[in-house]
Image (tube, rainbow over all chains, first blue to last red; front, side):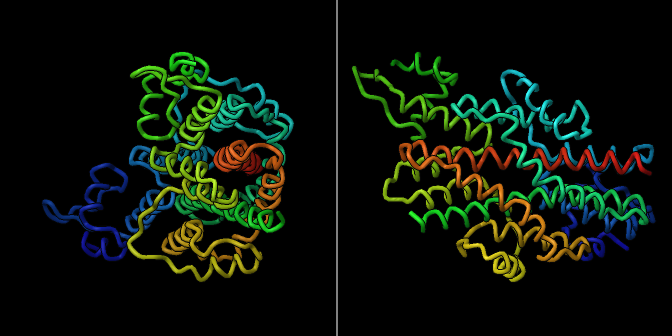
Length: 205
Length: 205
């Protein structure tokens, strides 16, 4: 199909598609004439993926490029690509000093979770503990255990749902979108649950 | 204390304190001379709160101003202030069309949660469902039930931990920081749990 048809099928404006092509978020089409190319289902699927990463995951161009590069590198295991997608969704939170990871490492040990020693979420958790400590809240890694126990079953179910029998591209898309989308879901549901329990408490007092 | 001592005690640079004073994120000090004022424990506590909202919650100046205004409005119930804090942490995700809230409303009905019909998280959830649908994933509100059931007990525990016997300012700070900080915690732990279960699956195949 031409770029105009691709735009119509994907709901992405032609100017945006051209921008994403220039930024290598979408692979080039097959040239049919100078300045003309045709596109297929693969392009359509990729456009939908990039759109979802932007709209659902709120990722920047650089982060999306990293995810796309991981998808296209067939030497990478699915586990590896999932790591790239997860790490891309983490906002860089510059801090003056590196926080101590001691408490977080102890928590992960206690949980028995196998996670890379370079996982940025270790630092994210350590930063939160440090910020709370600075505010005078003595929150320890043990206080995070109920949160870890709450999310583990849903994470396990998500990984279990990844379709093994489909193409690599589709499985990776599934993992990437799932990582981003259900992060937003969990966060929104938690805030709604807080509102609900705060309303109950408000009625009791 | 003078502004220099306030800076030292809070770890916030003097220039930043002056900026936050101008932006009304921190109440003015008590004037002692033209261009000179003294500050007390309340200012120190507020500075720590603003710093945590910026560093932990990644909130912009406008969002922090809304939270601070809610804290200072003593006519507002704690439940109300908690709502303002929660809503401030939601990124505006502009969408061309308003998504249908039908599925989300049905989910909340089924859960029996009392949440405001204006809660922005309803729209956040509906947007995610719509984006997934556009990608060809038939995720329904029922698929979100396990996530809701997972977060409800931790949300209930958080509301239960809010110290009723302390000053209004402290209770509100507790709620505000808790809302923001544990959102980051939950999201980081979920990604670590995904990495762990993906590693297990990777070893099995």
